[in-house]
Length: 485
Image 1 (cartoon, rainbow, N blue to C red):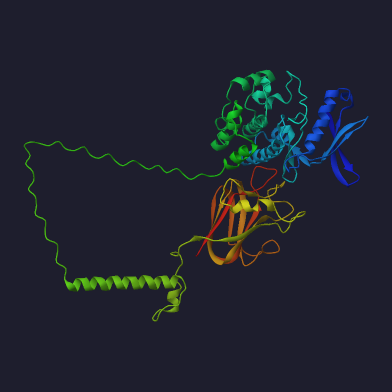
Image 2: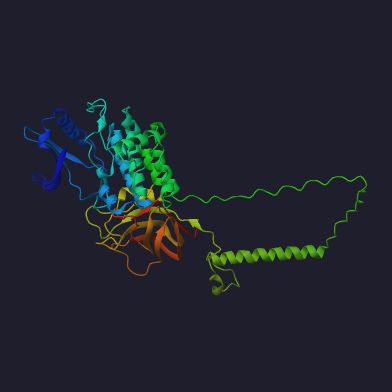
């Protein structure tokens, strides 16, 4: 329908993209109405995961839409280049597209053409949905003619192909097709013609992704198959629900412990008529306790209690009673009960960043909210080593200085690295000196020993981002610190 040009907004001095309707199509009144409707509908949506629309132009000589200029490529280009993506990247892209769809659906707007070519991968790590050219809403005229199917057939929902009424769940089906292709390298239906693929979609169930490629986690495969249900009522209820299911599908689950059933009781022996009952033995009288034995027992118990109390005083650092030396106070603390350390605040730490200070500050609370389905994530980068800076992280401030024993991390990201510092305050610049711990190749949950280091601030300093990019990033779903009471 159009060409897209890079341009400069001379009033505001910014780069923009201008979508210009082809001149030879301006004689088709229905296409002109559809193009103008796209601009009006898209302008309503102000979501970071949707390409923004700034203005529209409708003159005697031109019809155009002035849009946000996005540096980057499309998911189509990335799949053509790499074939398939790792599970963490598939989930990340799926969650961001689901966020975009949730914003559109809340405005009663169905995209109807979700496909890799309409998913933009920004150079800064963002993901944006573009091209609402055939979107449908109840507030505007539906410009689809009876019997006309609009969209790219490979990604259309069955109800779109059959001409039935559609809603936002059709977009979720298309998202399922996109994620299936991203996970295994090809769409779920691979007939030789568009008609053959359409017929397969109406009559067949695709092979689950984890059976096509064993590296696809079964939980991710189940999420994708839920999106690909032929019956819309069997898909997730809305885009927000789909996003939550995707976000949780790579989270580790507690191991299933199989408890063996108790052995069966032995069968009772048959009574034998000729066996005589054994004679009952007389119960021996209880032994007599001497007063001297009782006194000795009481003395031993008292001594044991005193010894335990002394040991506890030594371990907690309390002042010893007379007869206890300073050397006896320096006992190990391994016997002290470990507790979850209270956290006062968590803030994103990005001392070498540019632009808006911080690193996805709005998501920081998700790193310690007790819900592993939510997560703080770094911004996206073109290189795993960040390129222009040494790292980013999270600074965790405790209620007071404490001796810390370990940090527990829940993360769906794969192959990232970090250092952990225990400090007295949040540093103004990248941390210096020797970290308490250096951890490489983090994939999933990790428990990091902190060796009793004492401090009030713990800095998780991410030095290498997870695999699967570009864009490269790290998600931290939950953080927990354990230390002395």
